Image 1 (cartoon, rainbow, N blue to C red):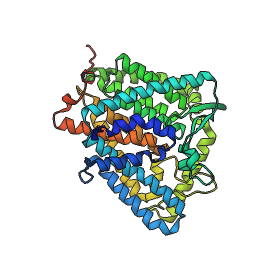
Image 2 (spheres, helix red, strand yellow):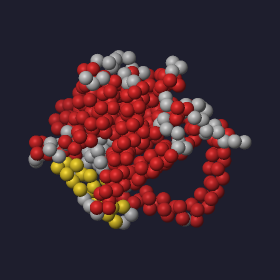
Image 3 (cartoon, rainbow, N blue to C red):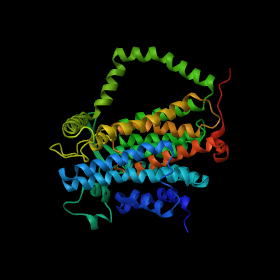
Image 4 (cartoon, helix red, strand yellow):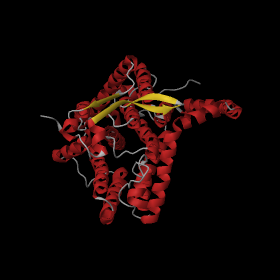
Length: 429
């Protein structure tokens, strides 16, 4: 008999099997159904942090109903599928927040660390094997495969583990385990790292080697955004565990390095590297921003207040409003949805900033909130309502961060955390 508070660790443990079978396109939805059947989640008793998600779901659903007669049925189905991620994510966050034991949280962190280790070993093996392209048909491909299969299903039943993309003037391999595309894989690595290390001493060997594994995996995905996010998370975590004197010293070092940075920038050394980094996939950037411009123009023309309910397709070949959770929210639920989503993001940022100014003995909760705040950068340029594992991990971390806050308010925080995270690092005068 499976304990109800072990649903989340069990899902994370079994996800590679689900992905390998090709049925990951319904994985989060099945998990949400199991959470409901378990009967431990009280949807009507949501923490304030999750209230904007309720309003967002309501507006999204209303926009779908209003626009139903005006758009093709297949786009309505696709949009309803995207909406299900927010509903399922809400249930996952509530499960992690209210119905997850300390033992289950420890198991989630343990499984995340093992994920990173296995992914590094697989990446090294494939890299030295010289395989440039790798696509594998799953068992589901022989059932659901064929002409006319929706893209959301085809991305799951055929595993594009290694693809080729244009970087810095040449074709480079991009790895994507457990995800439909490389940027989503980078997001999974970021979230797995946050879950694996938020209670680990940042100056320990375990944190150092876990960081090396994660940075190697992010680099293998060739995701520029996730690389920046990962660096911000590591430096932010170091900042959080320092005392006031250490933080001042760190800020002084940063300020002292500014003249050197500006000198190299205006001399052209850093500017040339930065432009090369940003424009390393210039074709992809042009297509993305063209899609953004068309999505804004079309939504503003048709229904700016409630949106058009779906992401329409045109001659660009991709749904308008894709590759941005922020823009997708505007397209599907208009200015009202964008305001609600903005409130949700602002609450994530505010919670993290409040913790950044405090000096706390136990920084595990603050490090979770920092990871969530940094992950908001992902919302600018990618979708959270499509990659299954990234969606699960994000809402799982969101629920765990709320859980930490509730434990802290109840005075039980010290009982729930390991001794590793309870060490405060001071800089001697």
